[in-house]
Length: 283
Image (cartoon, rainbow, N blue to C red; front, side, top):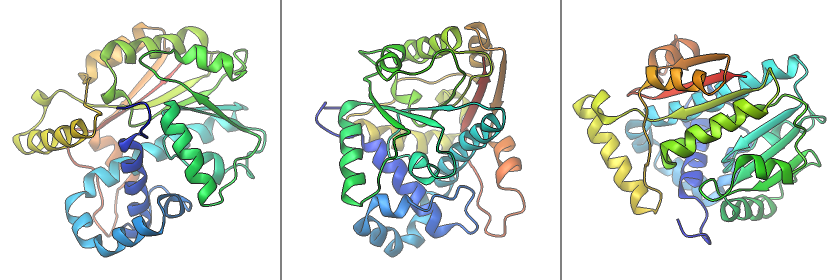
């Protein structure tokens, strides 16, 4: 991706969250700012193409909703324990800080992202008149040339207190070494009680023929936008590796678990498909 261009995957994830608000009732993950952020033209496109999108992208739309829901459920539990820091790694067009600032005025929200993507987001927020509170700290970081810890130090992050990290829609675009180095740095430097929620891709060998075809099509699409997939992980070995770098508790959520947790007994049939995985780990 050119440094001057915003992340296309950030734009895509925002579109799917907005579509979730329009097409799925009730929404698994309610984001009242999603349609505002994507803008009126994108909203009109979503509305005019709702039948096509409902047929062709239901599984991905459900996964994007589920991963945001798990991250914010984890944060809610942590807030009840007194945790006061939330770190969004690859924040994209995430709207948590602007939806929840009034409810959680003391919570510090650190939005970490590529400098170009972050500048584009801030411009977009200004255009739609969404104001950031004083509890939002923007931290520009390029994960392939800068480290998470360096970014947090620049942002006056309080390393003496625990935090929740959400790392959504990012790891497939990083090398396996960068993914594990980032997890290791969190495990080694964060206070006990800190947690991270992240998603990851499985190897194509774990997929059915139809799943491989869908994955290949998506891989070709993101590569054409300059953001190729670079990593995949086997669930069992990844869980062991995450525990091995210093996390005391690791939970892996596959499609069946996420469907039971968030999509059971829905009248509209919305559910996850494929081989999507989320992982939650605590220091």
